[in-house]
Amino acid sequence: MRRYGKNPDEDDIRVRPNRKGNRPRTNIRPKHEDAVEGMVLTVDRGRLTCLVDDRIVHAMKARELGRKAAVVGDRVGIVGDLSGDKDTLARIVRIEKRKSVLRRTADDDDPYERVVVANADQLAIVTALADPEPRPRLIDRCLVAAYDGGLTPLLVLTKSDLASPDELLEMYGALGVPHVVTTRDEFVDGVAAERVHEHLSGRTTAFVGHSGVGKTTLVNALVPKERRRSTGLVNAVTGRGRHTTTSALALPLNDKEGGWVIDTPGVRSFGLHHVDPSRVILAFPDLVPGTEGCPRACSHDEPDCALDEWVAEGHADPARLYSLRRLLATRERREGD
Image 1: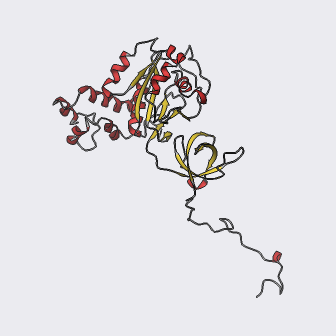
Image 2: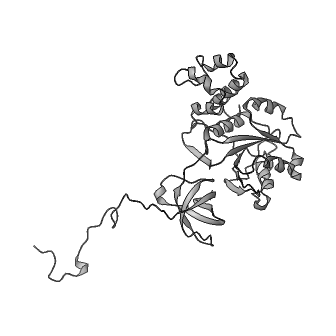
Image 3: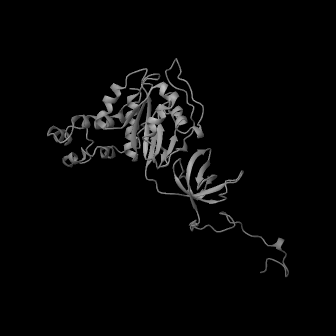
């Protein structure tokens, strides 16, 4: 039986709608072999500012990347309008393999990790010796995150004219972490920036620290042509700084050898839920051979740990073992302890 007349009109033909759309879905995705590599400089509400060759290009993340997010420091593949002209928008279709990752969680009970910076060589941990008071537990946590993520730590102590750095330097001396000590006057006359700059040449360095320690002021001095945001004062009641940096930003160093400075927002907590304690020991190569006699899944902070005997036999400095265990235990403490 015919449903339509002899000469059916198009309007007479009914097409059953496809629930998934009129075009059939496919798992085949374009390879984007023509994608150009760029570096993510900052991320702002879904818009990514990237450096492509010598041009600043604004881009969006392609839908095909799903939940995989690009962060500051990422090398990405970009297609579309790469002219960098006003009101143009390109598309990020690929995130290249990362050589290092700085991650943190909101607290130690939060399973959701946040990637702060990718592909940095070094983590500069900036802390004031006074106004606000130093927080060693937060420094410990930043060190653990650096070791876990494959970054080399650098300790930058500011405001040494208000308090002596000796106690902190003694605390971290066994770790062999390079350090720079500066005063407030040295921030003004540029000496502090010159001293820190010696450790940054040819490297990508992420700066981290709680608010009010002078982190953004130091970044402004290091990259004066790309002046960051305004800096804030320390609250006289709480002793804490006010957040002046709200998003991470990569800035190029004016250096023949190249190099990048990445300023990050001030932190008040640095959760380590994502850290596997077994990876922290890798930052202590002098202690690694002593772990061969450890029981399976040893935390290196228990009675049967072979490191105690290893150190007692004189193979390593006891201060190094103490430092390792202090860092491993920092996941069990809150930053303000």
